[in-house]
Image (cartoon, rainbow, N blue to C red):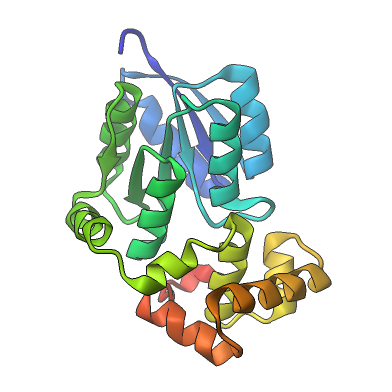
Length: 220
């Protein structure tokens, strides 16, 4: 694309935003860099500034990354979103791409990969971390039944599912997602109904089979 690329960085950790903003600003291809700590703010700033690429974390308080993607694309189908997440589990990648994100890289990637991905997406292309791209192609070609089941969940239900399956209590999940305790309990009931399971143990086993049990210390 002609001209410099304006970027909106969305991450609830200020240190992460500052670090990658500094790195992006070193590239002559990058123009203005806006910052949002939550999805709600990202939607507002996108409407205000119309950046060329939105760099979106997934695990944030408030509406979260998946719902943010849905809202941004609902308002502007041409919005170009790059997911930049700690999660390298394939189920997250598949869900993000099918939600409409143009790319997916992890926070374990080399910093220069972020610039490469932003530039490629701004130019109308897509970009997935090479370590995940081959697995993604195989998964989309032959999707397991349980992966199809998970698509029944709304973005917020998926967030709650992942937290509960990873050992969060309902109160901890409510605090993490800035929701009411009863709201999370209601989500848990709906999730079990949609997935055809009855217990938290079954939820954890399903999440484990789909690679959604996190080993990252940052999860909590």
